[in-house]
Picture 1: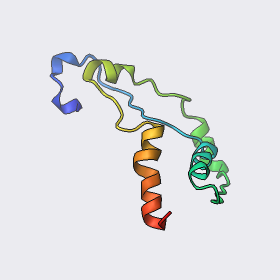
Picture 2 (picture 1 turned 180 degrees about the vertical axis):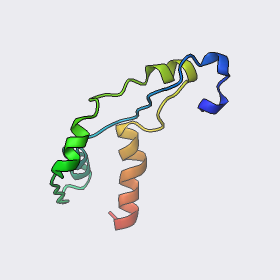
Picture 3 (picture 1 turned 30 degrees about the horizontal axis):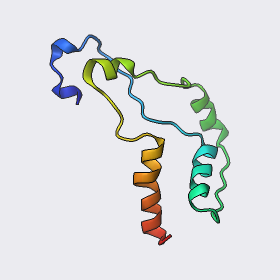
Length: 94
């Protein structure tokens, strides 16, 4: 998308883009909601968690949306409903 925008419409050199972000427990809860008998366990890697904790809580993609019409293909619902859950069902026959 960015390559196709006329240069005169772009007023910045760097753009943030974001779609959706889920914590591991939110992801698990959505998956278990779709597959009630599923057991999903996870344990944070403390070294990597420290890296994640240093990231901004949210990414502001307003400039990309305004200047070149950025919008994500997926939000949380579309990701689960259109991609993730159908792929799990296809793979495991559920």
